[in-house]
Amino acid sequence: MSGLVPLTPEQAERTIGLTTTVPVEVIYAAGLRPLDLNNVFIVSGMADRLVEEAERAGFPRNSCAWNKGLYATARRLGLKRLAPVVQGDCANTHALIEMLQYDGVTMVPFAFPYDPADADLLNRSLDRFCAGLGVARAEAEAWKVRLDPLRALAARIDELAWRDLRVTGLEQHLWTISCSDFNGDPEAWRRDAEALISQASARPAASPPRRLALLGIPPICEGFFDFLERRGARVLFNEIPRQFSMPAPSRDLVEQYSRYTYPYDVFHRLDDIRTQLAARRIEAVIHYVQSFCFRHTQDAILRREIGLPILTLEGDRPGPLDMRTETRLEAFLEMASGLPARA
Image (tube, rainbow, N blue to C red; front, side, top):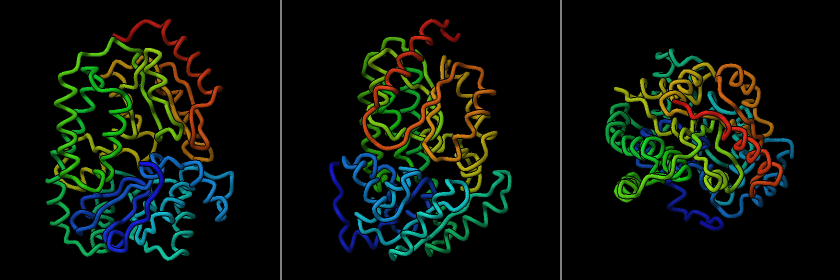
């Protein structure tokens, strides 16, 4: 995609924007098309201009560029409805909501509980979300059953990346992160995923790379995965995009969204991170943090708890990797290459 084409009036009526992963099953049950604005923003070919547009509209320079990109993307598309996460995501989302509400966008919010063990509160949040979109809970649960096989395909793509070394880090990233909305067309997503699995299964395995993990939100910079692979390293555990694919099997929506770690505290994330680092024999970790994001503070805890070499990269505005970041990555990979491979 290059540039942003405004939605037609008909498209705007049946599209609902996402700021992060919500129970997408409810949206599909309502007969609507979910659209993850993060993915549209970052592949628009004009991400830097979108950030500047948001700043001209009043967003401060010292605020998250992802949030600014979401705002300008929603405006450019002519979005009419948004399903923001008001508990379990960035606090800056509240300001984004207010700006878009002022512009006439209707909100259908969703709130994760603070504690994932609070099944009663999560259940009530799901019911409120269903009511906000005019959906019976049973219809949403039926959509979970329909989407489970697609999530299994995402898990297979992930497996082809970390175990079989036949899917690149970028492919793994794009396919798992797209599970937030299944590109607005689950059947097309399924066909394309099956085609990739068939194609990738026939590829020769890559030469054994330095086995890296990427923790934190997706990098806003361009060329990150290709830069690593050109230097003999590959991201084999991509924490947050993998979580968007809902990798833990579950019986119903409450269980699914309580096992989803992103909205909850760092300690629930750590349980999953430790398990995956060991299973995937990860040798070194890159923790990406976004400028002006509260998650930056969690870096101190991750460093103390992970027990592997870790490089913290902070990004601000969209664009190619800068020379300083490239130098830091090269130095980190050189250091990691001197370590014994993890058994």
